[in-house]
Length: 220
Image (cartoon, rainbow, N blue to C red; front, side, top):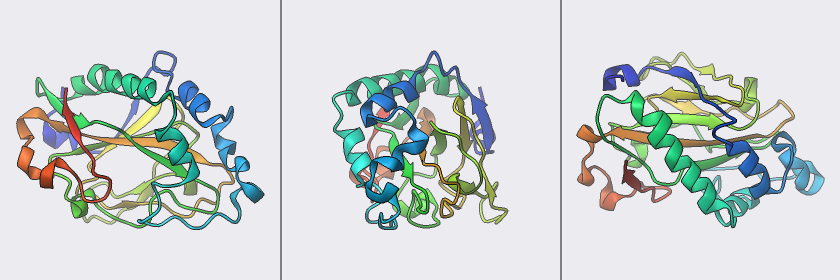
């Protein structure tokens, strides 16, 4: 168990991927055996796909397929159990509050997953949030996440992960962004936010939602 100050420090974490088969379920949801080649389902392998922006980075055909999948409830149940079983014990609090639905990301070749450099606090997220980033494909170089290690330090570095790893960081105050993906493979990932129960304030988010995605939290 870690204090909030310790949780704010970036850390690479591992999980038991056979026990938590997110990738296998995602393959079925997206009808794609190799998620790194997901872009090949697009016309011209996505080379003509428009650059994603703040306004449209959650509305691609793959996002629609994910959120409308008949298997979405199964994925959501797996995610909820994962947070309660794997993530919650990292926190010193007896209870946590976590994002009800994880945010789904796709970073196509020659594109980005998130529109621009940002901090989550800029979108009405509570300052007590801790971010978790979990890819389901290989992450390296320009298809990864770039983040500073401490707020306003500016020491941006790419996060490199294999499936079965995740990354914890203080995205509420630390700037983070994507470079244009020049790796030739698609990156598929989810991210979610967790708040120590003792720091949760129902009024800390306007009407209980964030500005962009109307994100809601549940007590776990």
